[in-house]
Amino acid sequence: MKSLEILIREHGLIRQALDIFSFAKETLEKGKRPPREFFEIAVEFSRSFADQFHHFKEEFLMFGLLSQKKGALFDGEIGALRYQHERGRKFIGEIENSLQGYSQGDVFATTKLLENLASYISLLKLHIHTEDHIFFQMVKKEFSEDEDHVLLEQFKNEEKRIGATDCFENSRKLVAKMHALIEQ
Ligand SMILES: [Fe+2]
Ligand SMILES: [Fe+2]
Image 1 (cartoon, rainbow, N blue to C red):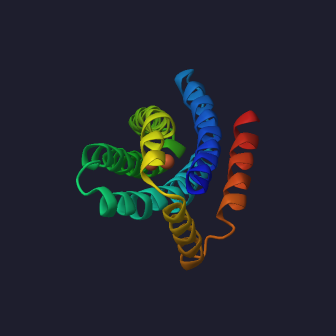
Image 2: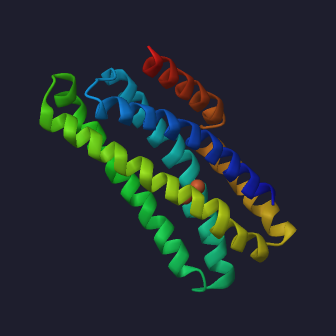
């Protein structure tokens, strides 16, 4: 399915970012302090790419079409994935809120940053694994070629509507920037 290939490709970039986040987490665990800018870019990437660009396609387009077609059959799985998207947003919000204190060396803010970063990484790894290996495998059996085509068009239209046609490329640059900042 072409629409699933797009989502899986996007998962690839999110996984790359998560690996870099993990490196930052380990750095914090050793008492070192990656620059604030690193975490600002991490928040930007998570919001613009993982959430707005990627999760939107799943939540509002793919899950929507699946519910339309199969009624309540996938409600349990969809509900769990939606909940994980929501929790991810919450962790990112908490990371953002901790950055002012973190940059001033506040220990409480640093703790808050570390715990929310760890939670975000762990949650997203589980989430992507579930989608790639379980949920998308179920979805594959439900959609016809025509429906895949409809979904693909909806993905393209949505990218145009939110002005995000360059989002993948820009987000790749953000990942490279984070990599450079953490390697210093
Ligand atoms: Fe998802
Ligand atoms: Fe996903």
